[in-house]
Amino acid sequence: MPLTRIRTDDLLSGSVANGTLNATALTGQASSTAADNNDLILIYDNTASALRKQTRADFFTAGIPTLTGSNTFTGTNKFSTGLSGSLTRLTDGTSYLAGGTNVTITSASNGQVVIGTSGGNTLDAAYDQGGAGLGRFITASNGAVDIQASSDSNSPTELLTLAISGSVSGTDAGPRIMFKIPYSDEAYTGAAIDAIKSQTSSNNSTTELRFYASGDNQTLDDKMIVNTSGVGIAGGAGTTIPNLGSGNHALYVATTGDANALTIKAANGRIGIGTNGPEAHVHIKDTDINPAVGFGYADQYHLAIEGNTTSGRYMGMCIGSSEQVGAAILHQDLGSYSQGDLTFWAKLSTSENGAPVERMRINRHGNIGLSESDPQYMIHAASTGSVGFFLEADTDNSGELDNPFIKLSQDNTAVQSIIGLCGATDKDPENVTYTGVVNNNMLIGTTTNFGLQLGTNDNVRMTIENAGYVGIGDTTPTYPLSVASSNSAGYVSQIYNSYNGNAGGLWVKAGDTSTSVSPLPFVVQSYNGTNQFYVRQDGAYYHRGSSISTGDSKRDVVEMSESATDLLKDIRVVSYNYKEDPDDRARRIGFIADDATNQPSIDSRLTNGGTGFDIQTLVGTLIKAVQELESRIDNLESGD
Image 1 (cartoon, rainbow, N blue to C red):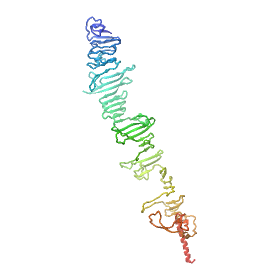
Image 2: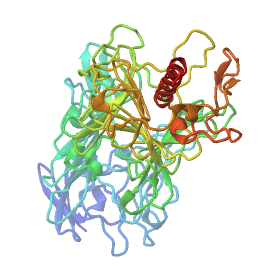
Image 3: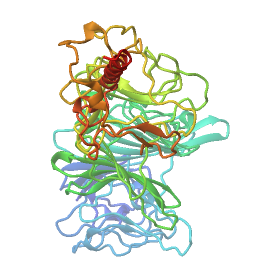
Image 4: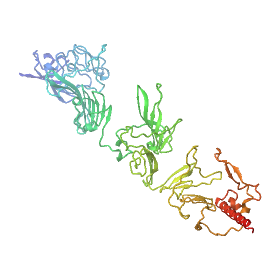
């Protein structure tokens, strides 16, 4: 390696023969003049084809590098005057440094540089190249730099210190660790870590770590800070790191302000998403989200839970205390693309680790099951015990406008019915006018122009048509009350007052029915529609032959020719009680219409065919018999 020495009074040149720099080691130097520390030393580096310069004081006081083999030093080498020993490049590449007073070399195999911890072992002492202030350069091409120390102390061991000398002010001063990546077509800018100390007042300062990353513009962006208040993270390029201290955040991650922030409050641990002031343990805020834009897309919801897509599997959330599950809301996957049911679970057991059971399910068809896992109707309640629905309104009894009710509707509200309690007179449970309603009564009715029917065993038993006509056994009644039945075993109806005392039976009130052609207040007909009995408003009544004797009520009138006394003289007269009168309140006198012992038999005209006596016929016959007897008496008296 050629060497040139320049002094103020002469120019000497030569070569270093044995690694010792002194007057005699310089070729062409005849005198023993000693070089002083201010002399400028020029060294030509064959490998780099460059001229290196150094003062003697900075170059080497105890020796110079020994170069062996084909390997030479590259770059600018600066060796501190505090370094003692020799710098050696071994041919096998196992060591770069020879030990000295202030340097300890350990296990430098495979080209790895290891710096020990004995006195003065600093990077500045080990490498001092290029002159003061020009930086340090460590090549780790053949292995990593390993900084280590032995310690048995149960406390952190300081291995590396980065310090800034001098006096600074402001809020951005401190050491930086820079990470550079040499892409050929880009700047080396990669990432950095800063330790920043900010002085707020005299003897009062705070420290924080700042983490930077670079984007396409090769500019470092402040991405995260760590300080005594917590951790702040910027979620997007160019986003400003939040002020943790003023926000009282333990963690703050934001892209474009609070609307896109994730924060954990330092004071109470509350988590805010989209807000920097969470009001609950977890507070999610996003006023722009609208699920109606796309109900099928998770990004339109404030919270999404994703689970296993295997059919029949559950996913969701649980609620409880003391590490026990007390309730749960779960989605059960039952088909493709998350088709399934929403289920609600609650715990009844008081034992440890007792599991909640399903209490309600909304299935994929929209049916709601109450303790029913396969609801077949819109609301399907099931239980091994009793099942009931309790509707309670007006619990404070403060007015009459609050009523419990159920409303039914179809055909786009054209057909509607209502069941409920009515708080006000002439008002239905919805407080809509409903004529005839009595307050605090229950109403079962329709609110449109349709009827109401009641049935049993898949058959309608009673009909109230829209005009108010009631049919029992008649689905199309044409009278206010129509009772119809085909009953071979008994009567169609019975009106019976069981009170054994002064009590009534059937009360019939009608308008003016003074003629037989007017509507009658009470009519009894046979199955073929023939009037068997009726009563007019004026008290006149008709019984088969009719008790009404006006000419307009009779036809085919002729005089009776047979003997009335002959019709009556053989009738057996008896006393009796009716079987339907168990108390025998009055013993009666009469005869038996179907008396087989009566000979000759009683004329059927007197007995309505053998079932009873027609009073009008019997009275007429009695009158005719009296007339006949009177005629006979007259004849006897006159001697005819």
